[in-house]
Length: 462
Image 1 (cartoon, rainbow, N blue to C red):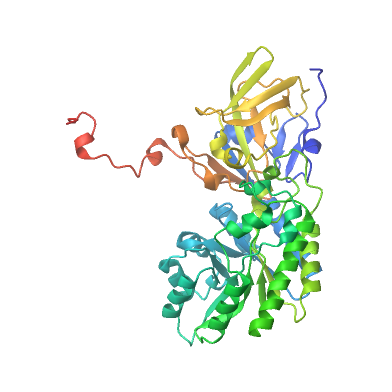
Image 2 (cartoon, rainbow, N blue to C red):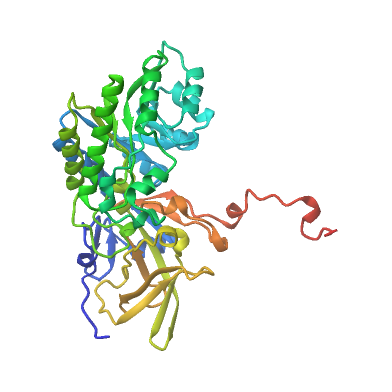
């Protein structure tokens, strides 16, 4: 392969997101070289860029303020990345919390979010979680008749429970978009109908009528979540049309008009590993907000409700870079394998969803590309981080960087093959570096295991 002069950051598309190349040809993250971060904190290493998170929040809020006149609020989906330092940044930006279960609820509250700014989701909420939400005056997105019975028992008329009703959205208009992300072979509407969440129009009408006549409940509006399955803004317009249709139909049947519409998450970014292609998305967040809000305004005949969003990937996906160090390098015939000490354990969406991540030669960003290499991890499965990627002549000890590792990476990371989960650091806007997650040790991998005394080392086997 002919040597070519690389332009790595331009090649990955999107915004720089705190990444730059210094005069020595090294990648810098928030002004700190990747090599230095690995040297001081070890490898593999998750690196969070605080300013990128703050920029994402403000960009999304600006788009909402521009396109929706009656107010919009953000509630971070902590399942995306539960790093408590990240949650604390979002708290300082005024972002509420969206949670599944009492553990996420507690983590969100202990990160500074007032309980009345927390949403509780889930199709099978525990009584423990519901009890905490009722006590905290949180908003509960109702997703089953069972939880209404539990809430009715827990609540009192003097302090009614704030609730939304989760709608089952499956508009046929989505079927013109690629539905392969759902992984079940059906159309988008078939996939959404098969999912476990939400009430149909008939079921929702019954729930609305029941809640309106019970003084223990304060029905705010409706919640929905289609999730990210396409980067086409037109799909968000279709979803907006369906939400408006639901609201109008239910008003006709019950007389109820929502004060809140919770639009859920799934808001795309410019670089999307989950798109499974290397090219960047050509649509910024403004296009998605505009498509959704235009459809809502056109379809709603009444006072516009407040909008709530539950973003996760949009706020943090591009704010974390995974660093790994080159180890064994093997070449055979026309193939070259470059091992790094990171594996697909740390980016599980590669294995589960075929996500496609860019890989940057952080130690030598200006070195010429000399050929293709398959970047692999050390586990006993193929652990292919990237196949046949153009690379310079990487050497043992060089650092590689994988951007866009902020969503569904750390939270899904297993300890397969006894691999300790990495440390995490955060680069502050002023260039300071803070440890935000300690590296796991051997004892921590096995700390919850219990060996019966009769099987302890040296003991009898029978």
